Amino acid sequence: MKICVHGAGAWGTAVAVNAATRHEVTLWARDAAQADAISKARENTRYLPGLALPASLAVRAGDIGQAHAGAGLVIVATPMAALREQLVALRGCTAPVAWLCKGVEPALDATSFGLLAHEIWVQVAPDLIAGVLSGPSFAQEVAEGRPTALVAASPHAAVRDALVDAFHGPALRVYANEDIVGVEVGGAVKNVLAIATGLCDGLALGLNARAALITRGLAEMTRFGLALGARAETFMGLSGLGDLVLTSTGDLSRNRKVGLLLAQGRTLAQAVDSLGHVAEGVYCARTVVQRARGLGIEMPIAEGVVALLDGRVSPQDAVAALTGRHPVPESVQPGAAASPRQSS
Ligand SMILES: NC(=O)c1ccc[n+]([C@@H]2O[C@H](COP(=O)([O-])OP(=O)(O)OC[C@H]3O[C@@H](n4cnc5c(N)ncnc54)[C@H](O)[C@@H]3O)[C@@H](O)[C@H]2O)c1
Ligand SMILES: O=P(O)(O)OC[C@H](O)CO
Image 1: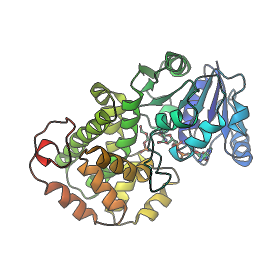
Image 2 (image 1 turned 90 degrees about the horizontal axis):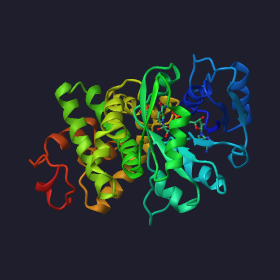
Image 3 (image 1 turned 120 degrees about the horizontal axis):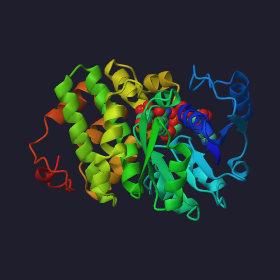
Image 4 (image 1 turned 60 degrees about the vertical axis):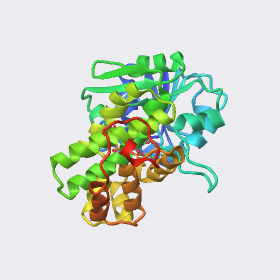
């Protein structure tokens, strides 16, 4: 199969390297200088250093609108902030398209709320045969060929099948799922919760606290997803519990790192600058909370992360706000924020 991967960051490079062992793959970088540097070094020294690119992997630069000619699968591996422009440029593409980004787009103006990836798709390029590839996956480990399981989600069987054909192999298992809403909610909300868990560990609150955050975070994610039309079982799968555990506990996570750095007293700007990569939770936390409030869904952990990122509370006060909450039942069922004893 001929595969185009757009976005030569850590994740785009890792999936391109993985697929290049079995398919004809081109990695498309944003600008010619970046493509040239990667191509000459046969290494993405900026985003995925230390990994030799296979000779068969072509690296190019240029407009996504022209790049997909003849492709059997087009992958968009940019951050969420670039997805809208990528999908606009892909209008008219007849090959299956899949995005890898995990997040929610920031609101475009004061009167709207930010969208999940499939909502942007429906808004700007509904004719595309499209979906998402998500799940617990650090780029570094996939690039090294370590065992990993992903989930391909789309209402279109052609997209699910193309993703399985492209990436399922000895070390990489790809499961199919029709619930694109649930898979995208999991991929977005886990980033926000990983900031919280990084903060918890950075403040040395202990293993009990970390387990509580992950478990109650899963309840928040599930409540939010159900209100948006997702299936409950998706949150017990790879893009829900799986990615939440990985990102919250794995020190390769950029989102977890943000929480750790904030706990050390760094400012948000310092934390983000030190990463050199995107941490989607920083950009989507506010939108998640804004949409949850609009739906009447309580997300106290996500609310705490937003207050912290906005500089409205200290790390210690964010923790105190959570531990000092009123008692509630354990149920994850959607509950109105106005009736606090129905949910937590
Ligand atoms: N790194 C991982 O382990 C991993 C795993 C799974 C999913 N993801 C998700 O994949 C997405 C990309 O993450 P990453 O780790 O590759 O990020 P990164 O920070 O390593 O790289 C981002 C890449 O996107 C490019 N880019 C930015 N804006 C662009 C635009 N407008 N047009 C084209 N290219 C643009 C940058 O030049 C860079 O090459 C994120 O949403 C992330 O959550 C990452
Ligand atoms: O490094 P993070 O926090 O962006 O997480 C990377 C992947 O999404 C983990 O599945």
